[in-house]
Structure formats: C-alpha cells, structure tokens
Amino acid sequence: MINGCRLKADDFEVVKVIGRGAFGEVQLVRHRNSRKVFAMKLLSKYEMIKRSDSAFFWEEREIMANANSEWIVQLHYSFQDPRYLYMVMDYMPGGDLVNLMSNYDVPEKWAKFYCAEVVLALDAIHSMGFVHRDVKPDNMLLDAAGHLKLADFGTCMRMDKDGMVRSDTAVGTPDYISPEVLKSQGGDGYYGRECDWWSVGVFLYEMLVGDTPFYADSLVGTYGKIMDHKNSLDFPQDLEISSEAKSLICAFLTDRVERLGQHGVDEIKSHRFFKNETWSWSTIRTTNPPVVPDLTSDVDTSNFDEIEKDESPPETFAVPKAFAGNHLPFIGFTYNRDNILFGNTPASTPVSTSINLFKKKTTK
Ligand code: ADP
Ligand code: MG
Image (cartoon, rainbow, N blue to C red):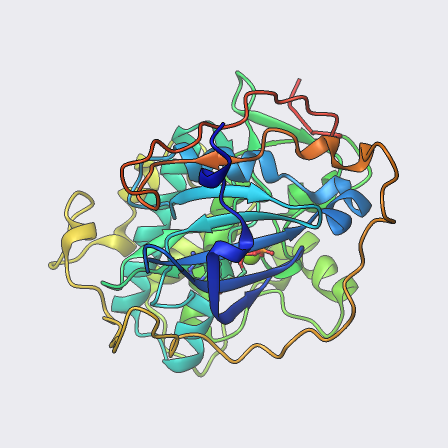
C-alpha cells in the first residue's frame, strides 16, 4: 500500500459543520490538494463501542459505496484514525427536508413530488436487499438541482430470503417508527420493508399538516398513540387536505398486514394521490423540482442551520499500551471508490482484512 495515498482527516479543510448525528458531526470539507468539496461524516469509535447495538456502519458503508443510484448519496472514501471513522460523500447543498418544511408551507403538489421521490428512493434500497428503518425528513437530502437523495444508512438491515429482518432493538425515531418495529423492542421482532412505508405515511402527513400525526409531549405519549393508531390518527378540521392525500396517509398508517406496499411498490405507485399532469414515475427525476436551491458557490451552506460547536471534551479510549483490541472491530473500513483525489496515482485498494468482531446484527 502506498502510504501517501492513504487519506487522513488532515487532507481536508473543514469549511463548516453542517450536521450533528448520533455518533459525531457532519462537516462540509474541501480536499486540500484537489480543491474538491465533500460532506464528511465522523463516527466516534468510542460512542459506537459504547452503544454497539445501534451501530450499523458496515451496512452504511456498503450501501453508500456500492449503490450506483441517483436516489442514494454516494460515498467516495472512508478512512479512520484512532478516534473516528470518516465517510467522505457527495455534499447535498439543498439541505434536508426538515429545513424545507421549516421554510415553506408545503402545498399538495410539492408533497406529491417529494413523497414520490422518497418512494422511488426506498424502492432502490429495498431492491438492494435492505430495509432502511429510519425514514424521516432529516435523512432526505436535496441535491443542487433540488432532487431528493436518501442519506444515513446507519440503521439499514439486510433482509433474509423471505424479505424479513429480525431485530430486538427498536431503531428509528419515535415519531416516524411503525408499530411493528416499536413492538420488536425487547421481544422477537420479525418484520419487513413495509415498516419504511409507514414512515412515508408519517412524512406525508407532516408535510401537509405541519406536525407529525402521533406527536405527544413525551416519548411514552407518542408510543401510546402509535400503538393505538386506529383511534389516534386524525386530521385537523381547519385544514383542507384532499381525499386522495388522506386516503394514501391512511393506507400507510395502518397495521402491516393491511398496509399499502405489502404487495409490492406498484400498488403504491398506482395510488390516485400521485395522479398528475407534470411527471410520471419514469420522468420525475428529470422534471423541475418544486424548489431549486439558489446557490452562490460550491460551499454555499444557506440551506443548513447554524450548528453550535460541541465544546465538551471528546471521550476517547484510554491510551492503548501494546495492543489496541478496541480498534479490531473497525478493520477493513477503509475504502476508496475512485482515484479522483490522487491524480494519476493509483488509489489504494481497500484493506482486505475484514475481521469483524463487532456484534453485528444479521438476519438468520
Ligand atoms: P445520523 O446517522 O447521526 O443521523 P446523518 O447521516 O443523518 O447522521 O447526518 C446528520 C445530518 O447531517 C443530516 O440530517 C443532514 O442534515 C446532514 N448531512 C448528512 N449527510 C449530508 C450530505 N451528504 N450532504 C449534506 N448534508 C448532509
Ligand atoms: Mg440521520
């Protein structure tokens, strides 16, 4: 391995912190030599070891590195140092859908567009054999043209031959989580891709109503409402929402055996909510998006909120003596998609060793 080719954090200049995630921050960075701009996600090894149940970074790396899909944010490089894993990916300057919803009252025409693009993006993930399990507006990003890409595959799980995953930890975000995933907590959860369609229902409701459907002051309150969705789901009287939109929301926010999408993505695509004169399922990615980001440079961050600096001292492992067993789980993480940063020098190949001592959840 040519050591000079090995990427390190110092090869990148941090332009700005643009996001904070569960295991570290996301930075807008510029590669010093090539001047290329990327988003770089940091994952704290210490935090991941401490909460190993929720760290699915192998899936995340695999999906972002191997997917060749316009619906999925592309990973270009990953590398590591004693404290962090680093993932260098395309920067999505349009911001996330949380930001979009906070800037606009989303009309139905727009909701139709974003909902449809999410459906296609999820279908791409499902077709790769994964259930996403954390579908929410924070994980939907907009590219420079205003089209949607999914990010954050840290909760993805590979489906078994029956299209199911088994997990006893409820992952996901309270407001968007489906009843079957919620029920899997502590028990024997066995569910399929339809949990993602539930979350799309929550997202569509949120775009049109302004709040999530099972909002409550407390986590327990939200959980209670989700489990009692048959009674708790309702639409505010004072808002005009089309019957098509309500019908699709209700078709998603129902028990998994009845949920739309159960028999494939086509039954979702043919729902009457998506009927329109402007795009079709095969042309939507090339139509004009509702909002086209107004960008002034390659490091324009106007679609990202100020993130306050995390001043707390970083928690790290004790200084290793001779053998750092704590780092074994991360062997093989390093990856180079292409050699665009290295001129004509061949990029280093991924480290072939991939011993994985990490308690990795796989389906049986
Ligand atoms: P976590 O797994 O901790 O939720 P995410 O991957 O979702 O972390 O990243 C956190 C936030 O950072 C996202 O909600 C988004 O606002 C921002 N972000 C992540 N990836 C990118 C990217 N490629 N381009 C622009 N912003 C990004
Ligand atoms: Mg996220």
